[in-house]
Image 1 (cartoon, rainbow, N blue to C red):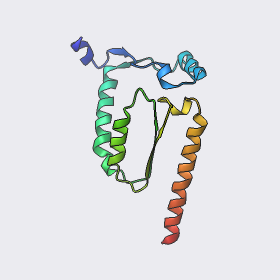
Image 2 (tube, helix red, strand yellow):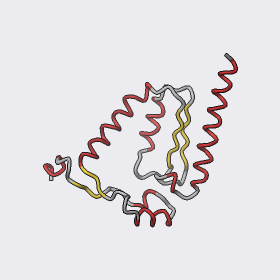
Image 3 (tube, helix red, strand yellow):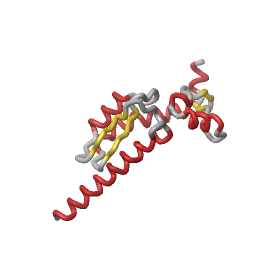
Image 4 (cartoon, one colour):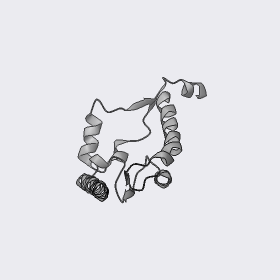
Length: 138
């Protein structure tokens, strides 16, 4: 098994289900029926994912642009504690973390997704107003 796992082309079933992504039954069905939705990954994917997560933690302190993180409150794929740690490392003066209780991982296809888009629009407008205010002050 160990040699198999180290083979970067060995394929694994995805460790999650559509039901873990969204509470919306219609979207679960669409994902199930979508021939382009990935159902397997390779060991190479896991190695790349691990490296990406390390890089996020290493580089967060260098991010100084506005950042808005929307995090699902019932996310079974992403650890909320890790998200909070990365958020705390961000060097931006304009940052916001919004944890959405009850939401599953795929916010844009979960129930009440309209609220997600409204929150994003509201934050973008707020940040644009801040930038306009700064320009006017100079």
